[in-house]
Image 1 (tube, chains in turn green, brown):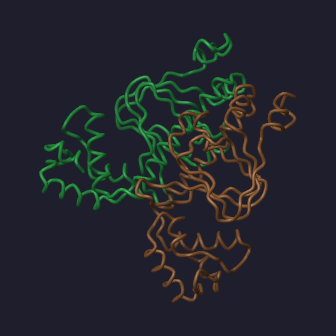
Image 2 (image 1 turned 90 degrees about the horizontal axis):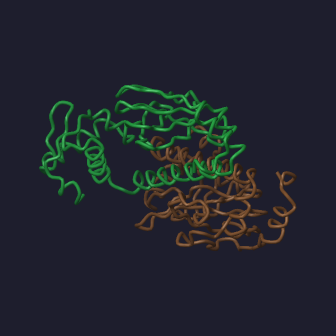
Image 3 (image 1 turned 60 degrees about the vertical axis):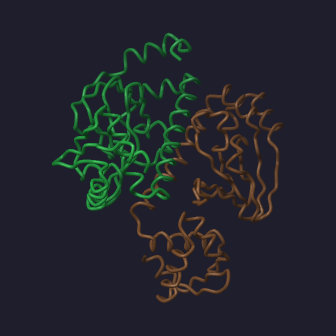
Length: 208
Length: 208
């Protein structure tokens, strides 16, 4: 896409984007900050999540190397009428393009406007998939799938995570997570110790 | 927006959009037809819904007079990777702009591209709201809210609808709907007869 930009557009991207760093397990953007701009992840892992009025959380998606998050830009796209929060799950390096610069680009480049369409549509596809899972997949399948994904993200059979954190990812209560993890242990799929889950039967989880 | 269009763009809209009519309670677009184009509702009521692999349905949103539906345009916006179906709930008159014409407009008009961003973002906001409801609102609240909305759409206290249809709107099983409707009746909120629900205590439902 870079080649399609004018010199002026390139210069906005080069000069206005701010490089930031976040440590693992820190909070970056609150759901109240509705217009932080466009986020571009260079390395690391961010988590975008939604919080209910009663304070329950659910993970909407992860942002990995090369991913762009546009949903903190409701001052540019007025119809983004929901609030997401973002936290860093690993040490993360990312660029933030401020809203006013992003707006200038959107108004001058049809390529960027079209790319924005694609990004929003992609996130929407993720969320409809998530809704499908929540409504029609049983919790054992969702939890098995979650553990396998976490294991892939960490590139390890051992996942350092509390039951509370899993509940916040999946939008459910801690007790529900604990009960299902104990069932998985009794089936020999995993081992449990304080703050750690180890996958012992990957094929068993995958068959779920 | 019309004034911002070039003569060529205006002519595409005027000459390529096809006027269509659908009778109440007919099926319009299957989830397999991924690229029907842009739909603009002149009058009536369409229902956009998602169907799970196992055939369960949930209503994503309604399209009323003046509403635009863009989600049947995955050949233009590649990241729309989910399938929705559309049916007519009332006698409906609507325009369909074919995908190739819509694509031409998207490529020539930054206004249309930006408007597309807004429409997708708005639908995404609806769906995140829906997910919030599904996850964290109890079913009695959701059903009360559904009955009040249907009553408003029909401008009547009497709603002609089967329990099966309500279940398809809400993504649940018929038995669950029937049980809760019987509870509402026992509380004096509604009267039930074959294929009809009459709201008898609007304030009661609203307090839920």
